[in-house]
Structure formats: structure tokens, C-alpha cells
Length: 383
Image (tube, rainbow, N blue to C red; front, side):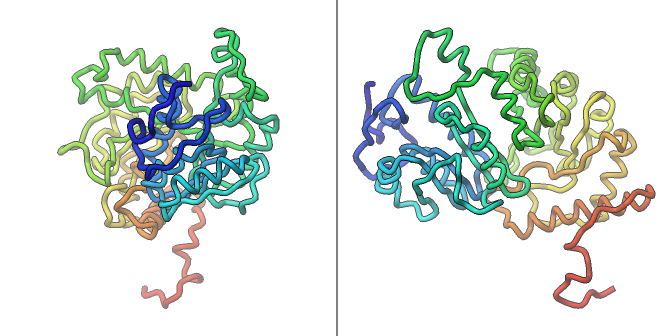
């Protein structure tokens, strides 16, 4: 395998460290051609959502990906079974204060329960026989609302069609087997969808020269069969780089809605608080057979919404969306540079309190909300 110095190839600083020997078992950043971008792009995808999160990089290998994620995450723990890889990672990337590496078996994680907001494990499954144990351990280690991102090569494409055999792969999976494994503890899988809902601002195109129907087909092929084992969500929003708006004015989902309605998912999310619900009528009319999750708090604004504001948006949504198909959420994730955990927490509290206002009006049971329960207050509540 031809190799190139990391400083010329990778978007991280290795401080001139010596490269880890390439044996074929673990990728090293000095590798070139398709193996290079195949491995880097997975971490670059994950980097978009790690800000403010506690991250586990399971089977971190050389450590390059853990270091990339540490540039944005709250903390990153890289775990690998090989002592030599861990020692190398500590030496090469040890300058990151929020990054540490430990030797361990990812099929028997030693960490406590609910320790991580995000777990990534790229090209790991095929290297272990105890795959059920691996996924079950991830489910245990994830905090409530946490996210797991896994990749694994399709045996039919990687080995059978190419005639290639990887001596380090213990058990490669067909796509159908990977779908079956997804039922080992993931009640919900959410997919990002950037190329369909943006057609309205790209003047009818996707900005790639490919038609929107192509991306609908790609999305549906990706999730095909998942709904048999778990609930599948499709997430849409209008961007949140460094907690800033991408557009000067509120954008409409109007052009994308017929295409989004063709997606093979259970739930589609829509950014609605930021736009003050401007598309609620259109969404209710065009999305006909799926649950609809609307954002009722703004993920960019540091002002916590009052429960009454949330309740007002819910009431307007119910004019167009049946209650049994309506889900309440934030406009997008809070894990960005500008929002503290405290503000994010009380925005979520407002979602529950605002929902309970409407539930009372409809004669429905209210959801428990300990944060609003006077019995747990540290100061007297003023009526």
C-alpha cells in the first residue's frame, strides 16, 4: 500500500509523529486512493454532529478519527483492542486535552451505563464474531437520546462481486443481516436528508446535476427493510453552522413536500419554530401517511421559549395535523458551540410544559415533568 505523510493528506495536526505500520488490519492516514477517502469521510460525516457531545470511538484503530472528532466534541474516548495502536494514538494525538485512548474489547465495554451522547464504530462489525454483544454494549453505554453511527461493508459487494478476501474479517454481513442486527437495541434510527428539502432554494434542482427523484430513490434504498425492525425518522432542517442561520429569510418546504412524502419512513421532522409555523398548513396537506415531528423551540436562539408560546404553536399545528400523527421536538439538535446544556435543558422543559397545556385543554393525561414540580424546587415557588 503506497503511503503519503499525514501532514500532506489529513485535516488534523499529528505534530510530526511516526506513522503506525500498515498491516492491512487497520487503516492508517498515510494510505492513498479510495481507502483514504472511504475512511476519512465517515468521520467527517460524524464531525458535523459531535459538538458538545461525549463521544466514544469504538475500535478507534490508529486514532486519527478520534482526534478529528475531538476538535469539536466535549470529550472523546477512543478504545481499541490492540495495545500497540493505543500506545501509538496516545503518542501521536495526546496533545488534545479532551481526548484519551484506552485499551479494551469493544464487545465487552468496561464503561458505566449511559456514559456517551454519541458512539461511532466504523468498519468494526466485520472484525468480531460477537456482533450482538457489541451492539448491546453500545445500547447500554448510550445516554438517553444518544446516537449510534455504525458502518460495515456489504459482503455481497465487498467480497463476492470483487472476488476479494480480507483475512482480518471474521464475519462479514449481507445488507439483510445488518438490518437484522439493527434490532438489537435501537428503537429509532434517524437519517439525515440534505438533498431533497433544499430543492426550493436551488431553483428546482439539488445543486449536484442529479434530479431530486434520484435522491428519493437513494434514500429509500438505504432504509429499505429498516422499518421492519425499528422506527425510521427522516430529519430536515435549514442548517445551524456555529449556531448561525444559513439564510437571511425563512425558507419554505413547499417544493420538497411531495418528494418527502415518498420517503419510506415513519416520521419526518420539520423546522417550524424558527419560521413561526409558516408551512404548517402545507405540511399537513402534503404529508399524508407519516407522523410529523415539528420543532416548537428554536435551536439557535438562547432565549428559552415560554410554555405558552409552545402551546400556541401546537394549537396551530393541530388545525392541520391530526393529533395521533403529531410529534413535538426542537427545530434541530442543541449540540452546537453556542448553547449551554442548561439552556437546552430548559427548552426541553418548555416543550413538555407547553404540551401539557394543550393536553389539559383536550382532556388528555399530562406528561410527568419533574423540572416543573414544586416538590423538587430548591427555592420557594412564587404563585
